[in-house]
Length: 276
Ligand SMILES: [Zn+2]
Image 1: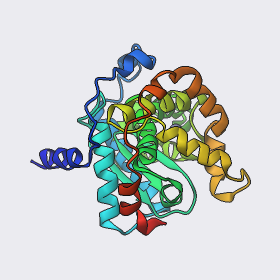
Image 2: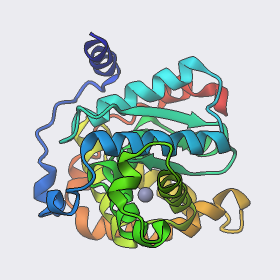
Image 3: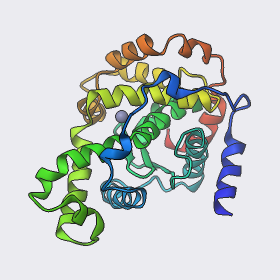
Image 4: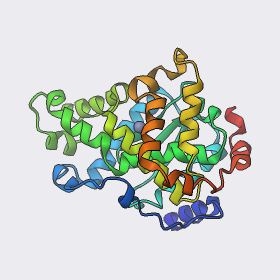
């Protein structure tokens, strides 16, 4: 029942020209043997790890106390997630009350975007582009893979399976700390560029102007790189110019083909006016 309601809300938020049959596996590299690498972290464990990491991140910066804004973000986010191969994850989206410009994806489907970044966006298509980039990290398990790769050192000999399965254990605590620290170190550049490509496709599939994410990257590029609000974003992501070049190289003519879809600027301005 709750799921049906969420879907209904998501559909109500969708742009008019939704339901495109855009096959992203044709455009974005398909990950082979992904299942093999994850045999010791199943989906309920992925969701639980993400839940603990989200709680830790929210301890650092709480959500903006505006239920209508958070509802709007969730409508857009759930609609985007519904276009992907993991629509059944417990997707949740939140605007964090932080002036910096950033967005985070936590394993299992929790996604945060900062108030500072939302305030710089010009349309719902731009918001969708950023959320879809983060959704792509979850779909491809980029953070989960990085945790799994780095966990052996962090756990100093303790088995990953113990850390994943035994809640409230010291090993579990180390795993979650390691996972949370990842947001200050960043992912591999190839993961970021893949999330850009997949994000553009998800947003286009959901009916948005495909230039939403490139629009945000252009805004970041035009800002002063010394701006303290950009420090973490610039440290953890490739430079905006490089991301734009990579998108142009791999995503044409797809970008232009889906550029005429609605950006929904007015609705975005109306729904987010409190963060500005
Ligand atoms: Zn990213």
